[in-house]
Image 1 (cartoon, rainbow, N blue to C red):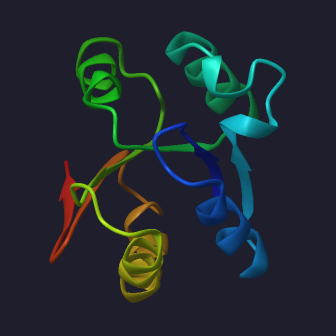
Image 2 (cartoon, one colour; image 1 turned 135 degrees about the vertical axis):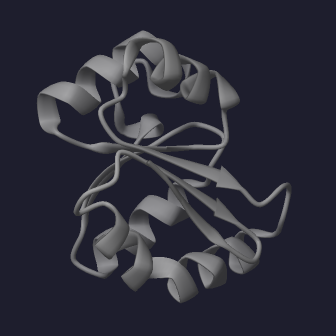
Length: 117
């Protein structure tokens, strides 16, 4: 998977994906860092064909209105420790990879993976 990790999520998540062989970029790695605008993130995700991974519901609104980003993973776990977040991703990783073969919008909760059609 090619991922663009938004500012509300830890850079450690991007590093974790990279360690597993995925192509992940965190906003901290971009020229404007965590101040990169949502529209710029959408543009970058489109150009580089990346899944935007975020906790920000503004991306859901954008997706529903404009269809951007092209693929979106909403992390709806609430505030949890980074280690718990990584464990949740580890449990769901195979399902996520499979879901994004056809889905454009997926939501990861503490207990479920919701694929929006």
